[in-house]
Image 1 (cartoon, helix red, strand yellow):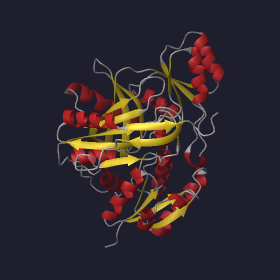
Image 2: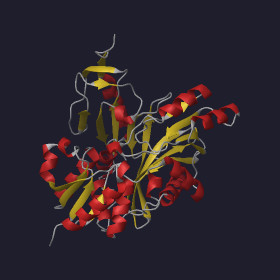
Image 3: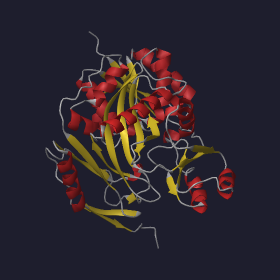
Image 4: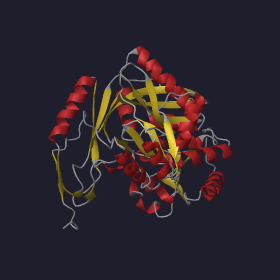
Length: 417
């Protein structure tokens, strides 16, 4: 029996590493496609598990499509998938070309581009914030002077990720500044981004995400994740906890909207991560969706809390196999993220918890002396730790106690006067 061959579009990052490790543990052969230069940043452990690597230019989508398809055919690849949001449209096209389980290649951009996403949500009746898509700053100025904008509102890039360039604004002056801030983020691999800017109604309530696996158009929702985010202009995620429990009617409302959102952007096979806002009266508003499993350790939390292996589920879906999604345990898991209190250079991180059965992960992404920024987007977080246990209240309390012991010291930039 020939072992399945899996091709990951980008193997860097914790989610991709977990996917590769799961594939290898299952006896699969793992290949990767990445950008020239990125391959050199792969760890020695990752190099050891890869059976082959294609170097292609993701900033040239048509060329990358041809090269990935050719490589997959030459290597006899059985499944193509990614955990990288920027590459989900390419994966959909590759899978369609190779007749593999995947997502709708025509709608795949709508699961990545927030402007297209808002149009699909409106077309398909998904409850979402009212969104205006702007090409120029003078369009925003006219909306402000005519009184058509209600504050606070959210200004965000059409093609961003990880909350980069997203600002909650409370005045016309702040809106104009945020417009240009929304154009600052750059895509990975030098990929061209849609320069348009979105202005959305600000949804009030409690923020959750829903992690789902879809097989042949039928979605199974694994769990709800409750999010803790920073207040103020920049909404950075500071923590996740799952599974979140809601009243039955509220849960049904969330699942209904999430199911509609999944269908609206053509997610037919694979994982999805849907961010929603639940209002005090139980109404659900879909903020956005991505055709990937949630980042920020959500996959790890699912494994520890529910006993579901989300990486195995992604692999089985891509291979066209029946997916095992029934929980095998009833626990709870939470993650807390570390952020810098101010821009500067990291001087010290003290008070970190020790790893153990209740704290399986403790990671710091920055080293002493590295330049750090304040909490403006998820990509600027310094590290995290995960806490697990049988009881949600006890786990959250433990996580907060550990978090309060951590001290992050930041020195001024060396080049500052």
